[in-house]
Length: 538
Image 1 (cartoon, rainbow, N blue to C red):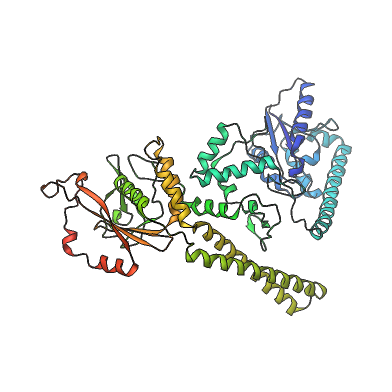
Image 2: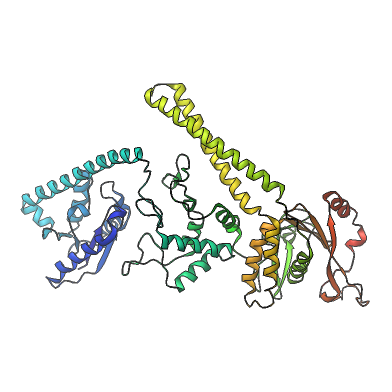
C-alpha cells in the first residue's frame, strides 16, 4: 500500500506555511492510525481552477494511475477536495472518478472524510456531498477571478502594474536595503571579471542564499546558481524599469522609473557588455587560464576571432578559420609573449584625456531620445483618451498604435545607446586602471583572474585589434589613435640555421603611432620577403 500526502497552493502570496500546514494535518491523520506516509508531493503556485496543477506533480500521480502503478489499496491524503480540483463540475468529477475507478482511496483531513468507490456505490449522499463541494469551490474561484479582474482595473488606475516585484523591492515599491546591497555586490563582482558560476559559488561559501521561490522545503533556502546570477545581471528592473510579460514574452512598452533604481546605467551596461563573452574557453592542454584579448583580437584577413589553442601545454593564438583551412593566416603566436609585450607597451603610450567623439555623439543621441520618448508618451496618452471616448474611431486607434510603436522603437534604441555608452568609457581613466592592474601581474597566483579583469578593462579601452601572419599586430584605442607592433628578430640575435631559432631570438617591437591611411599603406607594402622570413618558434 502506498500512501501519498498531496498539498497545493495557487499563488505566491500563499506560500508561507501553506504546504507545511497541509502536510502537518496529513501526518497527524496518519499517525492516529499508525500509518506511514510514503510520499510528500506538492504543487506550488499552481491553480486548480485553471487546471495548471495537472501539469505538475498531481498530473504525475494521474499518469501513474493510468499506467497501473497506483490503484487498489493506495491512498492519497489532501486537506480539502479543492486541493485536487476547482475546475468545472464535470471536469472535477471526471478526475475524482478516475481515482475511484482505479481503486484508490481519497482522504480529506479537514472533515476527516474517507472516500472510496465502495462508499460512492453504497452511499449516494457521499456522491452528492462531493458534487456540492466541487461546485462551491468552482464558484468561489470564479468569484475570486472576477473580483481580481475588478481589483486590477483599480490598481492600474492607481499606477500599480504588478504585484510580483523583484526580491529587493517591497510590496509598497520601496527598496529592501539589505537585499539591494547584495544585488549591488553581485554587479560589482561581475564588473571585476568574475563569472556567474564563480559569483554563485562565492556567495554560497559565505552562507548567502537566493531569494524567491523556495527550492529546499526543509529550511526554505535556495542556493545561488550560475543561472540565477546570470538572470539577475540581465534584469533591467535594477534600473527601475518594468516590462510586462505574457508566457515569457515581453508585452507592450517598457515602463521607466516604475521601481527605485539601485544600479547605475554605467555599471549595468559595463557588466552586460561582457556578459556574453565572460566564459573563457580554450582548446586542449591548459584550459581555463583566460584570454586578455577575448572578443577583441581579429585576423587581419578574414576578420574572424583569433582564438587560443594549447600545444604541448603552451598557449598560442591562431585565426579561428585558419585552424580549419578557411583562411590563409595559419600561423601560431605564443600567447604569453604577445600579452606581455602588449601590456608593457601600453604602459608607455600616452592616452588622450578628451572624451572620444563617439561618446559625445552617443550622449547627445541619448538626450534626444529621452526627449522624443516623453513627447511620444504624451501623444499616446492623448490618443488613448480620444480612442477610449470613441472606440469606433479608426483614426484614433491608428494614431494610438503609431505613437505606442514609436515609444517601443525609441525605447529599444535608448537601451542600445546606454549599452554602447557603457562600453565607450573615457580612455584615460581606463588606461590608469590597466596600468595599475599590470603592476600586480607577477605577484598574482591566479593568472586566470588577472586575465579576466584585464579583458574587461581592455574592452573599454581598445576599439579593435588585428594580427597578420607577417607578425603585424595593430591595435586602435578609443581615443582615436592607432599603433602597430612588429614581430621581428632581435638585433643581437646570433646567426642560426633556418628553422632552428628559439623564441628568445624574437621580440614584439612597437613601430609607433599611425594614421589609418599610413597603416593601410604599410600593410600593402609588405613584400614577399617578409613572408619567407625566419619566424619559426621552437
